[in-house]
Length: 443
Image (tube, rainbow, N blue to C red; front, side):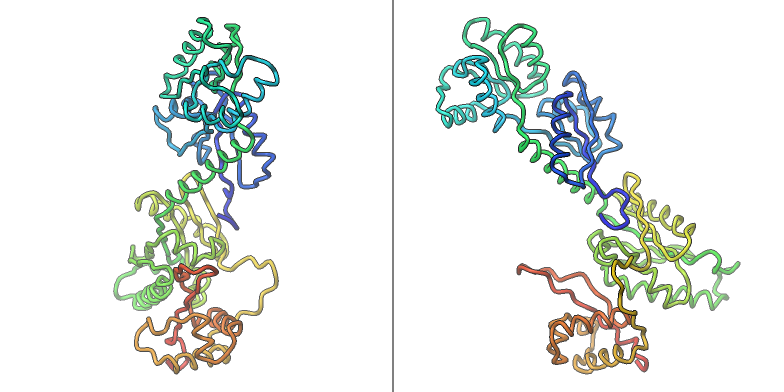
């Protein structure tokens, strides 16, 4: 989210041994990605991975574990957020073999290796021109593998079958060092860590969007406008509610939304996140607020709720509309999962001066709509949906002028932009507009 979103970044919890966490944090800093916010969770033993992950779970969008073992340990006990891990092997294996050769730690052609698949080891040795016939491999199976790895390395070394060990597990590396067994710990390269961070960010973003797929909006008449008794005898108030409902129905079709009466003061609008994003210009401007307030000469209160269920979305919408009621000025509020709160103004915060907005009585805009209506001879709403290409063809003008004309109609309240049409073609999708001929002065 952008604009007024107070949580633009993706928060990644990095769970691992101290050295692994430091390296991941360093790679993230060097990447310069402003959307990443990292929270460390350091453990001394892989068995504590779940405890450390749960300590930060309420503050992160996703957890990135230092390897498959701590990932499985934590996942086996349940996590409230999505998670992934830094892969083992790959470039880390090549790097470890190079270090072993340069530092003469052990004979790389007679060692034991854990976590990596045998076929990956054979391929790596073949590429670097080493003989893998005496290399023994124990692949990763499950969270109990750590003790199996240690026993495997010890037994082979003590029997003389190996000259040393390569491991991916910090506790195993520490135990091997304490036992005096020549060993190296495979560490992921910066490129591997960067890829893992990108994967974690994508998983976190996808989960956030999935949680927020249901959108409910409460549009409410301010309490100061409501009469003491709201029965059928209050004709003016009933007419006000009908006028509000008509405007909501008209504008809700832009969002493919459903409008339902909620109580004597409010209506409930149900839509999707994608439709809301289009109608609110990527959550930078409040839907309904400005146009309806101007049309009815009355401020309205708008609250938008996101959630994983309709119940959660409606509860968040109620919270949001109360925030809108307590605020000053024309503004809507959005409340979503994990304390996400946005303030959406009725008008865009203009970065550059905008042209004066046209009014519904702007003669040029009215004449443009009249010309289009006469050429379309519409009989249904679907006949009154046009895009810039069609307007250019109907009026015999350039495509650029057609886009300006449609923009002027929107500013005048004589047309509504609709979600872009899906297309398999490359380039920007065409944006259709609904012409509101009923707003012509003598319509």
